[in-house]
Length: 249
Image (tube, rainbow, N blue to C red; front, side):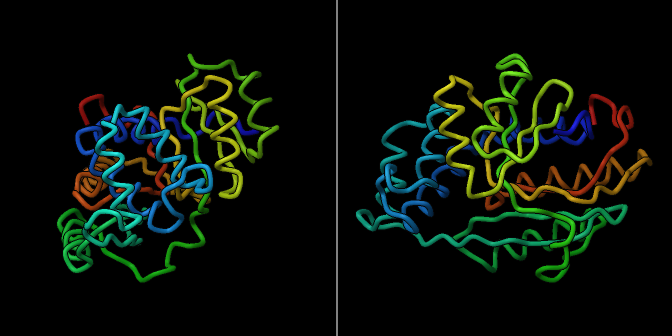
C-alpha cells in the first residue's frame, strides 16, 4: 500500500467534486440512462446501475428523477440517445488530460472540448495518445474521519483493492474494474460512505508542475473543462507542487 503522494492534486479533485454538485443531477441522470440501456433496469442484475443508484441516493436525487432516467434507458419512456466519449489532450506544461463526456450531440461536445483546450493553452490529441500514462481503475475517495486506516485497509484488501494511499485528509483506494462493485458493496455494508466512487483514469506517470503561472493556467483549463455541461469527469497526470497554488486559485 502506498504512502502519502500528490495531496495537492487529490485536493483539487475533491474540490472539483464539490463544485460539480450544481449539475450533479444532470450528470447522474445521464449515467442512470446509459447504465439501464446497457444492462437493463434491475439493479440486482446490473452492477453498474446499482453503483450509480448508490451515488444518486448519496446526492439526495429525487426518486422520480431516478425512475424517469432509468425508464428512458430501458425504453419505457421516450428520451434522447446519449453517447459516451473520451477526449485526450495536452494542457500547459505538457500535462496529459483525459476528458470523459456523455452527450446527445457529438459535434457540439467535440467543438466545446476542442475550443476550451485552445483557449487555455492546450490542444487535443488523437485517440490512444495518452494510454500509456493512465490506467482505467475503480477509485474511491474516503475521508479519514469515516474510518481508521487499519480498519479500512483490512476491508479493502479483502474485497479486491490493489492500492490504498493516504492523501492529506482522505484515503484513496484503487481497484481493478472487475472488483469495483464488490468493493462498493463491502464499503456500504461496513457503513462507510465514500466522498466519491467511480471508474476513473488514474495517472501512471505524473508530470511535476513547479511553476505557479503554468499551474494556474493548467487548473483554469481543467476547471473550465469540468464545467462544460456534457463533461462527466476530467483527469490529468499533473503533480502540482504543494503550496504552489494559493487557497483562492
